[in-house]
Length: 162
Image 1 (cartoon, rainbow, N blue to C red):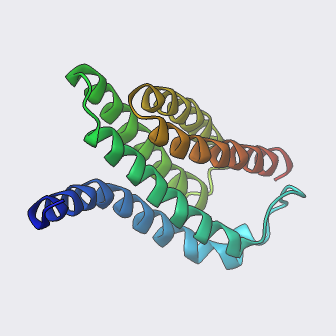
Image 2: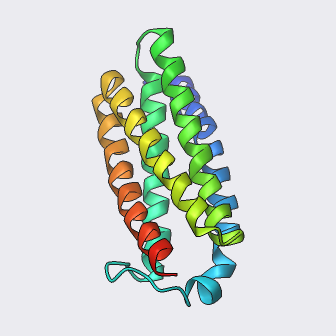
């Protein structure tokens, strides 16, 4: 692969990573101040991991979903399939970012749960669609789906017991 092609690929990957990074940074900005106070005092599910687990998991997942959408972008398919993939990807990313505000900033646990239910549906739809375009992208989104579904169980428990 020529140097110019590598630069184009890296640049295209970074373009896909930018909105994901933006959601990550904004989400962590509203989340971080609440971890030691409001969140710490909530009644949480017995299967809740320690708080330090969330950051590395999200870093990995955000990288994986970026690779997934970038692989879809790189895959030769119909324009219609690409458009649907991008609409689904950005829709789930929007709901992902919204959740941090609803849960951590506004402390609206029930609304955050509703957001998460919609996010699970969108991530499932995105996963299925990505599988039809690129199998590796589908696998990466499957990992994200599993984590989102797990997060749904945590949010649901918090909503029921707080």
